[in-house]
Image (cartoon, rainbow, N blue to C red; front, side):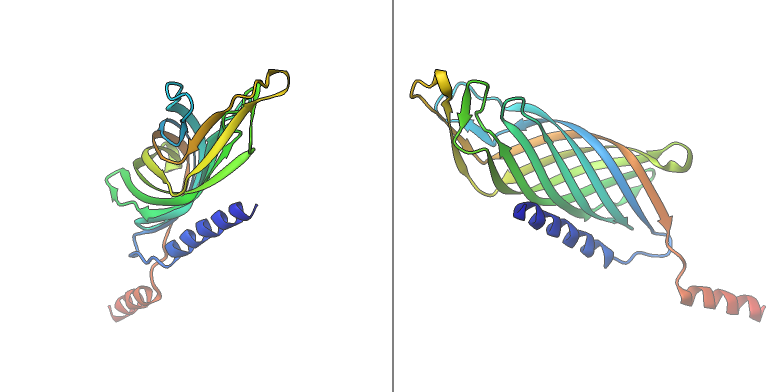
Length: 226
């Protein structure tokens, strides 16, 4: 829980950074909520006992919430996948960065910081690990684009290419359980890279900034002088 509170504080901090951004009168404030699916290549779990039994490809499901102020964005993400008997994963992080709009497309360059939870690594119906969960901090980068379509331009489609790098390392040992315990063990090294490509579907709501008071006063004076 302390780790989740820490990550939530980071996400709130990123949102605070975006609130100080200033854009011109044509810029907008908005909120976008996306769900995404991503096939990934995962180097963060390595079987060091049986080196030929590596599983590098997997998929994940995620949710992202972004506050958008002009060409800037900040928010939070959570993604992962459950493990049927073990090997579950969940990442919680904050993102912030730049998203210039060219025509109908928004291009995004977002930095990411958060923590990744590894659940029951090496656990199966017949084996159990020496620890149920391990947390590792990570940093990352997301490059992508999005477009709002449909009536009112609230429906959003987009993509991300992303990379994460774990900042720490850990070791988990799995042993056969109960009747199947023959004294053997399997060791897993945690920590590495994750590369993925996410396909996003969601909603976006924008509100145009009001003109500055000075601009409205100047416009009124101009009409009165006429």
